[in-house]
Image (cartoon, rainbow, N blue to C red; front, side, top):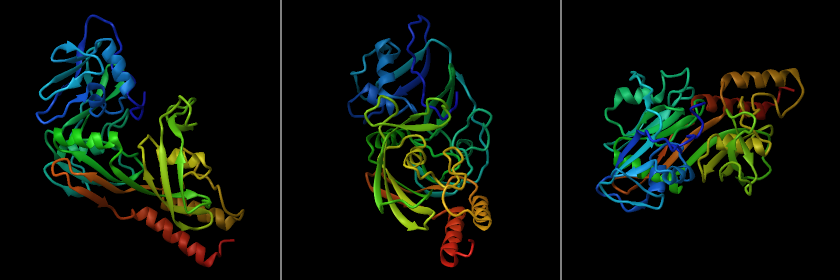
Length: 356
């Protein structure tokens, strides 16, 4: 199983021998909230349906007693999630890796992630990640937990969300349990504002638009995502709004605002409308899709692929409500150097058009 996948199960098992895998102590100021909603904000990639199923078979305990999914948590409750197999942890090795920190206080840290950096360890790739860097730089970060396979789990210190390895840009880390809970709830309630910039193949018909299509695992290849009709039982509801920033005829520079945050959402949404991201090797953007049939143009595109050896996507802006002060904060980042170089190259091409 790939770490990128959603958590598969929260313990639907009727075995008599149970082992604790998650323990959550509810903080003093926590408002009353259904336990299925609360847990879904604390365990990465969990769903309320799976949590409800786990409650139904007695695998979710509060203060030592099993509860139903409609139980409302109270301050100082102690929640245990139990499984029929003993837990095994994947050790996160602290590593002294430089980070581009754009903001930090006692509650949160914002990092401008470089392209090519993996956010969290995965099979065959347990070193050199953002999580390894965080483990070295910060002590006692709150943890979310991701299921790797059966009884194998990975704790991810401070992570509230993630972006893909080859996507650059802003990612937020919680430094306290309180910040983790409140930021996770912002993501769950879709009140966190995120804007990305991207370069897609083709000339988009309209200057603004919205793509609405369910996003879920591809039925034949679970390493990639796919889109499904909005009335389908497959995938999860996903909405991407976009605005054209600059047109180059064969490619388009755009801004995307996420209403939801599904895995590979922008990448798969634009593929679904025939405009995959430039040089996206997983969704068909790493071949020449638009342009002219000439040797010079083909060489021009190959040079562009070398300038930007990844999919053209950057998490540019993040807007949050500060978990402690309640202040609305907006963080912006510069266009990364490789995307800027690509745009400059296309601007020159658009002016001289001497490649034909």
